[in-house]
Length: 202
Image (cartoon, rainbow, N blue to C red):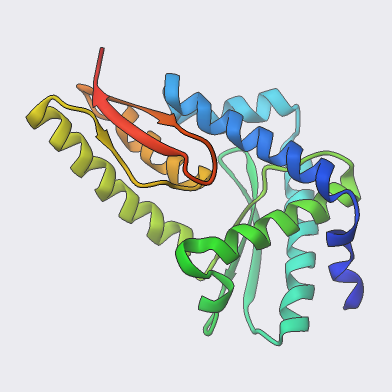
């Protein structure tokens, strides 16, 4: 099991930078165009087929399983491919500590899992990790935030600036805003203070 943690020691700078760059590109696409086709477009851009993506999810799942064993946490792990990207879902009780405040620990574990994939494949991964259904719940919350911001923009005609968010959270908001008429969204600022501005459509 100790070998499972080895990926965090090698190639960290290169893999992390590449993964961040890809996620930033995905999120920036949401500023200017409909993100509904983001998954398919990204798959075409990367040239990775479903089999390759599933292999990435398997590698990440093995890595996460090793970490859970080391930390003495119990959880069921599922690997899958969704919307053109590899995913690993961990479900079970007593997992809140692995999510952390506002998903901070979850984001860190996701980066480690991506590094594990990079170490074995030599290519950056857009792997998405979810623990205890956090991302699904957060996506629902952000949908309500986005709709509320859109209503304010339509009512008052003024831009609404949301609180700083992670790339995943911004993507969730962009998806909702892009589906609404009369409003548009874009990101401004730099990490970790990057945020979304919702304004009337031009």
